[in-house]
Amino acid sequence: MENTDPAPPGRTAFADRALTAYLETLPLPRARLGGGAGDWRVEEVGDGNVNFVYRVLGPSGSVCVKQAPPYVRVAGESWPLTPERVVHEYRALEEHGRAAPGALPAPLHLDRDRHLLVMEYVEDHTVLRHRLGRGALHPGLGEQVGDYLARTLFATSDLALPAADKRALVAEFELNTEMCRIMEDMVFTEIYRDFHRNSWTSPELDAEVAAVRADTCVLIAAARLKDRYLTSRQALLHGDLHTGSVMVGATGSRVFDHEFACFGPMGFDVGGFLAHLLIAYFAADGRRGTPSPPEDEQQAWLLDQVEQTWDVFRERFLALWRSSGRGDSYPAALFADARGAAALEAERGAYLDRVLCDSVGFCGAELMRRLIGFARPADLTGITDPGARAACERAALRLARSLLVDASGHRSVRDVTDAARHARTG
Ligand code: SR1
Ligand code: MG
Image 1 (cartoon, rainbow, N blue to C red):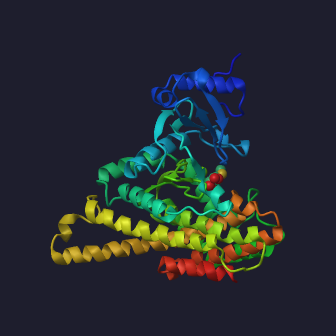
Image 2: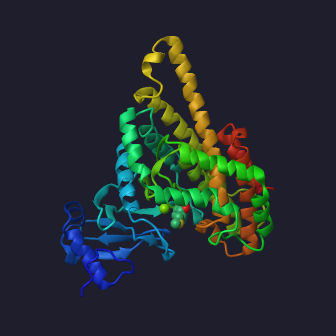
């Protein structure tokens, strides 16, 4: 019997034909592709851990099809996972896309029964992590991602939304429970004890891993951040913003892969992205294999992007708050006179200081879990010499600890980049 699943795991000619026949029934994808199903070609393009991703090419253009199997792609059926994640991803693309037009791929179609979404295929863009791994720079990166973060996090917060609208959105994304559970376990818990999915450069880092697990300051800091992730509903997060979730090209950056979207603390997104810039910073040493050489051009640029991301995020967020802060928190009527306005302006700065403190902590937590847990990034695993890899990971672990246990001691983003330099040179 012919397989009629539109994009079953494991490609076959039947599956490709079923997928193109299915797309032919969808007006938006069909218009983007041009021609008919017989003119279209399917390529599997996904390299993430969780889903199947296809590019379908037609005479007029391409679309991207993402299908969520009821398990984690890299693990197979031994690790079941709700395929409903694709619904949350689609809805986040809509909500974030409204807040930051042009910064995400356009969503084109959601099929709730087949657990499949179709979105714009972003032409002539490359996954940022791949570019960084080749030593490349992407001018404007921090500005572009900082702008995305400011727009999306502001627009979905109580600073911008009426409480009733915000509560409805929160209720909707609360249902992304299984994906949040992965983060809760993976980022804040599993790495701090024996767990079969953890891995690190062993035996080189065995002593460091044992020391992390015995360090109650680290354990408390991680648990405190977990509590913050569990309890804060500050804004709609991307939920897994790393350098594999950003595509870059001559026309800018696009943020994708919102399957972990949920309401949570803004610092989780900001700090997550900074962590992956810092991973690239340390990994550059591992690729060169020489101990503590002077920073190269890419490393200096990466730290500059850490600062740019935060500075642009902060400035644009503040500007949005001043111009469009019509949500239910900080009621305008209470701050209408000059004294009130001055107090509110001071509070805006204090609010962003709190977001920075969260971001620094979550940056440390994300660094830690990417060094000694599941889903170690290709920046590091691609370093073939274990000695060189362990040396740069050891430096990154030093930074991770300092950001985790002393988040509030890093009072500016420059304190973070200084700490990274310090950690790198031991
Ligand atoms: C089920 S594996 C989940 C991890 O891999 C993804 O790439 C995410 O980053 C997540 O941390
Ligand atoms: Mg992802």
